[in-house]
Amino acid sequence: MRTRLRRIRIDGRTFVWRAVIHCVPGSGDCHRGIRVRVWGDGKTSQKLEVDLLSITGPSPWGACATDGSYPTPVDVRAVISYALENGWQPERRGGTFVLSEREHGARFSLPGFLLADPVRTAESADPTAQVARAYEAQQQDRRPAGC
Image (cartoon, rainbow, N blue to C red):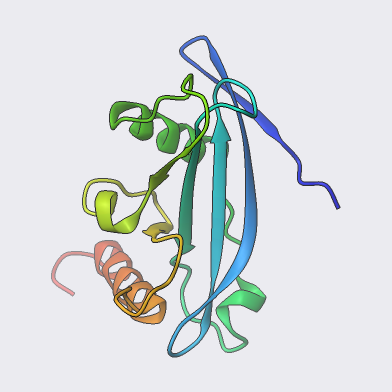
């Protein structure tokens, strides 16, 4: 099955992007991960890559099975704009510019998603704990004052 490439125009420039869904195992559940890749100057240009972790709330059937989160064009526009402001050079030939949790997680956020590191290592944070903290913070923000 071919992955669909989408187009988005930002400041007169056309970018091509795709997003692929995958499961990210955690200590308590699996979570929906989405790898977004963006090219700004053809397939041999430096690509932008970001792994997003959905922070959709807990589900009795497992987050991977029921989570319908997917980045919108508005989300992808925010990713591209941030990457351009932070060193991505789409006209450069070859290589990958990665927006990782380690380097950019404290400065960049998208509603409904967390940045995740592309390869999970022993030092990486547990996705289940990350999602639980983000979900709780999201719920706190929605509660009326005084509750």
